[in-house]
Amino acid sequence: MREAIHPEYYQATVTCNCGNTFVTGSTRKEIHVEVCSKCHSFYTGQQKATSAKGRIEQFNKRYGLENN
Image 1 (tube, helix red, strand yellow):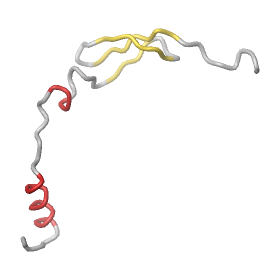
Image 2 (cartoon, one colour; image 1 turned 60 degrees about the horizontal axis):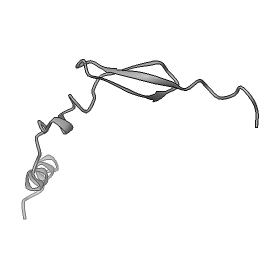
Image 3 (tube, helix red, strand yellow; image 1 turned 90 degrees about the vertical axis):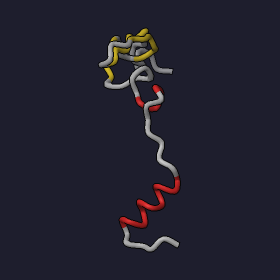
Image 4 (cartoon, helix red, strand yellow; image 1 turned 45 degrees about the horizontal axis):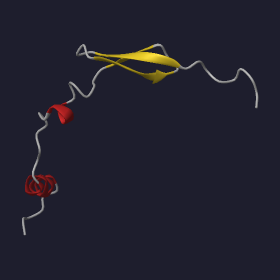
């Protein structure tokens, strides 16, 4: 196995735009992200769920199909 070909591995601090920070392993010492599990709408429950019926109606309207 060749020596000195692998990058250094650090305990990286991840910082989100919302101010949340956590530690993970990475080849970089610091990582900045735009969204995380504390501020993403999927994890916070603020995501609007569209019903299947609404999606079907939207598809039919877009392509000019009649409702059956």
